[in-house]
Length: 485
Length: 46
Figure 1 (cartoon, rainbow over the protein chains, first blue to last red):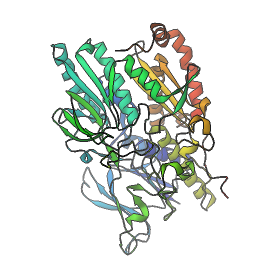
Figure 2: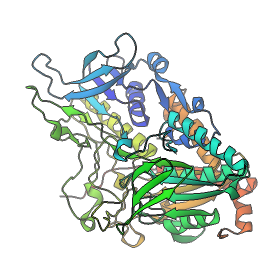
Figure 3: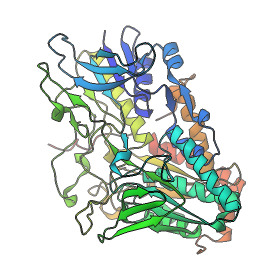
Figure 4: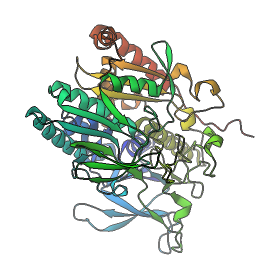
């Protein structure tokens, strides 16, 4: 009998737990430890943030589902890792603290045979002074509660515009090394469309602010893509969309401070500037959770497990941008020191960025961190689960399933406006996610037949279809496992 | 404001009949890319 503990119940943790439970017999234990009581389909947060979808539509409670499916569930947060156990406990364990109910505040040693760290990122708002969701006129759409607040803030500004007040709207990244530009891109297009629907578009100045060097970088170093029979650069496509919608842009901007209605940033020329706004949605920096790890004698071994995020089978040797390779990226997400620990999704430490690193004249690094959004999170979680299942069934370590971001495609279906007949979407696929310059030297590291862009109503339908399909899948309804990650 | 997408292009982008076929096409194409497999990158390293 094996006991598999999964930390986190986001896309990655939930995918791993559901596949493990489906494929392993009941004699094996699958336990999820998560501080969250709900599963949330994060990609639909942008529609909550424009008031077009209620947050109840993108979430459901985990406890009843896990009870029904025979998955153990502890609503607790991981505090520290003991991969060798300790003097009193022979088995490896994670120290967790309950955050609700009778056991609130109590600590428990959650022992395991296999551990999947799917804790995702910490939303590091503290890294930018004054960037607090709901304060200083800034908002976030990173969680459903943040998105609810964002809609409250936006609707208030829309009401003011209806009464004749002009407004400035600022959307983008809130830190010099933030990632997730795609979510901000979706949000700015949705907000712009909402302003038109409310007939206040001419009252608003809408501005994109980002740490990207060029539009359409998306933390993936931009891309060449097929669009209507042509080969376009992603920055040309995004520029076309922004110009057509009268959206201004500020690039190479490392936002470092937010005051009531002013975002201060440093640009690549080293200038410190301020951008005034009435409503802002700024994506914070992501960071690891600051977990500690200890050996059997309780010596600190954090550096064996964490490098901000969790260390896995990547090549972390520091090297210049010109020497980066797809082979630096992990394939199995296994920790090299403790081979029964895995970190799929956003929880693993990337070997380096994907976008070219740039510094301002003041030596401040200003460039996007690598994105690892829903789809790769699901795929990497499933392959980790499959390797654990094989290892248990074969009685020896099996790492047959592999999935490097350098050999994996991704689809970014960016909503550009909500509505069954008036909606729009920008559908972009990329293969591979991390450019492989050896395999595709003439097309900026991407396979053009699998890297394309499309704009139109179909993109909105597609995003809506994915919303329903993935919530169906997450609820583990009949034949859920036929829907790919 | 600079009109970068022509009215005819916008008509095609928003026409439900054209977009229905585009939806089918995109669904299949994305499924092929996404579910078409993934793997490692170090197989050829000796």
